[in-house]
Length: 85
Image 1 (cartoon, helix red, strand yellow):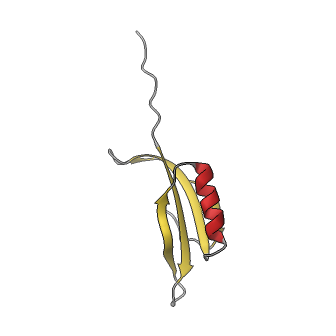
Image 2 (cartoon, helix red, strand yellow; image 1 turned 90 degrees about the vertical axis):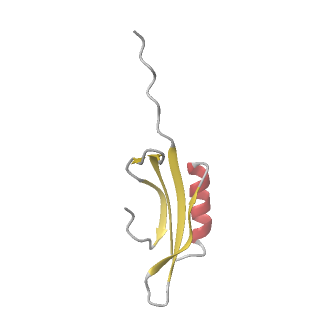
């Protein structure tokens, strides 16, 4: 009896940037925007880091169709970003 190969969950790769509002609280300035690769997410985040109070690029295994998500892994972070859930 042959076993089916284990299917890997697709990856969700995201970049987001934040600025400070008039009240000092962090507000979304860019994204969260899905990226095609981890390399592109890091490149985008590094570019955004020169213009915003904080940026983060992260990835996680994700299957939104069934609501299944793995633990997030930070690829790049600079400056101030809100706590990510």
